[in-house]
Length: 363
Image (cartoon, rainbow, N blue to C red; front, side, top):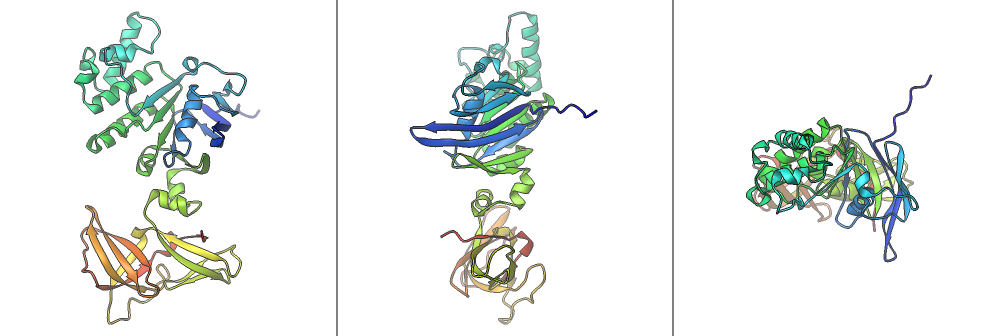
């Protein structure tokens, strides 16, 4: 006998939403398992929050279906009300009721008024480290404490799914990492499926088991953070996660020729114009030794010379900007610790060939 296939905790199929003749969400599909954190990552206006609102039931899709544990909860005809979807919500502004105590805020979404409700409230406040604040009011709490109350309130009804829309963006940077980690640990303990919306790549990389990269209403790439970062689908995907350098070239014999040597360009016909894209941390620097430069290596290929235009210390690393001798283009390199060569200093540069991406040139 074949083992029974367990459906995803949340599944959305081919969601579409139009506003005033403009397609805001375009054929979006996702699956999230219990205990899994998926991030919808993309720039503002790409359709992330609209997708969340449709899943929550506060907005209706124009096409597509939404399932929880394999059961249809919404299509364009049938619709389970938001309060019956077993979906929790967390937003940037926390949305705590200022006239209610912390305990009553957490109890708000729970059915009944008996001792079991108070037991659940005390349990959840204890799990977020705020057991002693049950009678306090939101204005008496710090931003981080309010965030934890919002989390306790959202988790108190034991939702199967948690939707989070930029929930940490209002927090001070000093608090943000700790609150994010605490939140993630608690959600994992509850075995909750999480869909987190963010425009910050660092937050997505830190929290997500899987990232769905959105652009212009579509999911353009989906996978584990490591795979999205190491195997981006196009130049825009590389640039969303970090600064980039770009070298233009033309393909001949499946090779793109550059001042840094030849780069493999399989699948491109001769004469194709391409861009070699790489991140500043993958550029190596060596001092000009008598004008000869370092010898080529299989890993880094040939060296090309540039002249320092500016160098800045960024805290954990230094950013050095160069004007290249061969064509006057500008490239940037990041170097760990302090490295601040003077403007006008000639240096030899190499590129990590295994960290470069070759894409069609975008005119």
